[in-house]
Image 1: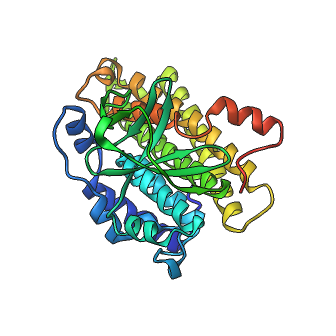
Image 2: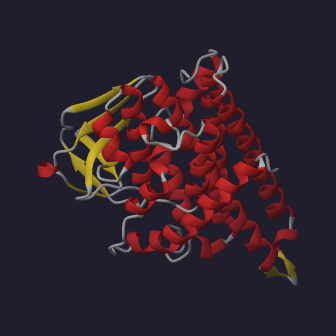
Length: 326
């Protein structure tokens, strides 16, 4: 189901073409294998990626949360580096907090952020390297941007081998502390990326099920496979519809937009988990090999689930009639 208007479709096509040239499974495999891969930060800044929802008067593109969702869905589909998500969130936080100097650096790609995850011994900085100067912490009710001191940083292994990480004992000075509206946009962007991952994984599984034959017929003709993929397709359509309903509600400042965003994130997480798992199982033994693309999507989906409010928390909030504050 295509819910996009013509101008929104143009943005989706632009984002898909951009990520086809600057991201994808091939560079993700290279990173997982330990190779150096060029950063897309500079070209993303030229495209205006980091200022999607930042007002034009502040140097951004002045688009809405609908375009934010469209763009990050394509980013997820292409396994785009998470520093693009982090720097976008940091720029939004700087704009909301009124830090013009920091915003200018972020929009130009001169400052690069990493998502920070708290651990029992410090923090993990996702998709971080020597280029990283900022850390973004996304909570349900606030988003903070802090300086990164690389002195005590050391490499860390993640469940997603295509996302390099650093571990630090502490974060630096808090530069920006933004309200829940930024967390809301971050949650929406993460949900969109999860749906992009789910869509790519389902496409991969369906294509293989059509081409691979067993007992003289495509394996997709067997109920055990086609029914599971159909169930994933239904879950994906529901999540995608909820994503754009939530994005529209946020763009129009509707009452209850935060609840809708929380619902979108929950459905997107479930769709991504179902689709990436089904893709691996559909491919059989090939699906669990290192050289295949399927595991990259499962690992990225699992990592994204760790950022911001998680599924169980969101489910409790939704039942209670709560959610991310718009």
